[in-house]
Figure (spheres, rainbow, N blue to C red):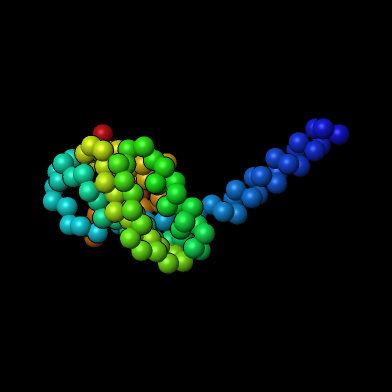
Length: 127
């Protein structure tokens, strides 16, 4: 009986998680970044686009706000499908850090200066 109950609970949790999962979220850097500027930049104005609803936006914002690499994460504006954030880093990082962060946060695409790539493409190009 305990095994059956455990399996039912696990199945319910899996379906619940997949119901709230996001896909096709795009992280757009709003500022024009020159080559190599990301390594010295501590303040990023970013837009995250492609959420299913306002609850997903707020949940994503809470995850970003809790991330320890930021000294602050400010919600500038939001609607049901997107949010604009001002991210202040504790220290500058390179492209691979941001690509890894995008993967951790479930971001499908990263757009910088009008060029849209997947986080994996950014990591592969770095190597």
